[in-house]
Image 1 (tube, rainbow, N blue to C red):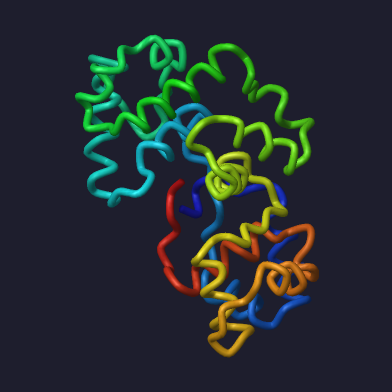
Image 2 (image 1 turned 30 degrees about the horizontal axis):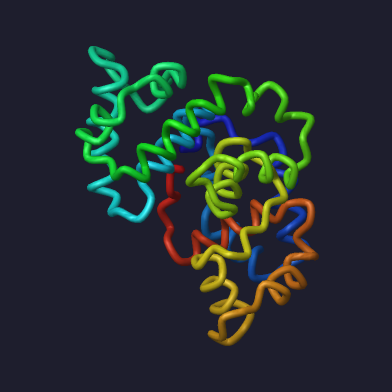
Length: 218
């Protein structure tokens, strides 16, 4: 993991958070040499997120591999390969259903692909967009809610200051470390995280590590 290029803000973020918050200082020291990393291109990352909704990791991987074999036959698909949204947008519904996808997920994937193919979602324009504006653009896609959009901003776009107050893992970690086990409200989470600005993504990531030391790949 340490060989993978870390976000440019990471070292400054850990120094700042360590000075401001004693809980984070301990967590940062306990998990050295690991950090957020980008895994894939935007369309493939979001497609994979949709495929994996509400099913186990094992089942999601099986469906994903069948989906890839269907829309990119003959391709040796590695972790950093890219899917073509034009092909997914044009794929027949029945063909996609045969991959093990529900009718609703087929609808979501085709809508996502159409947004990319038409330019309604244009990654080249995202650098100039504020976090909230990009979240609003992403949730226009069927099947992408705020949580999925926030995870995408953190794990793919490497945005430094995202606070996913609806995330159960973050709620549990804050309850454990700051609230004597009591689940915090969204307002309480925002109040606590005010001191973490502009690195709330990094704080969130270390709090997740306190519950699960192995970083998830989004």
